[in-house]
Length: 145
Image (cartoon, rainbow, N blue to C red; front, side):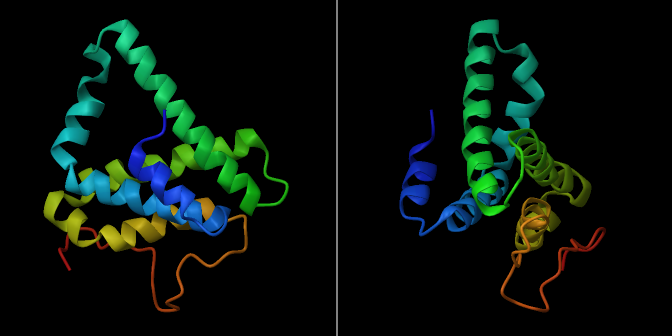
């Protein structure tokens, strides 16, 4: 149930953190490169026939479980429930910030949004979000720079 791009990305990863960072990058990139499609997906999911909607939910859960397993491998002592909670929080940041910032600003700030997602996920691991010490997890609201 995992997409080919995520499967390739995680297979090439050197460790769980590298795999998780790759998945975050793919998710943020997809969210903004396919923004219109993602908007329709989220808005119209309730109108999808029950059987198809159930299949989509199973795929979502499988992805979250995969991501959560990487997160648990990174964060010692993190429970499966807490890992899933952090995953859903991080995943939902992307469309929410996209709506708040607007299309062009969100695309321009994709790198900041990527860092925000990693900050949520890695907050309990002690891992650095970014190797750039000046990098911030602060999307500029109301500005396109």
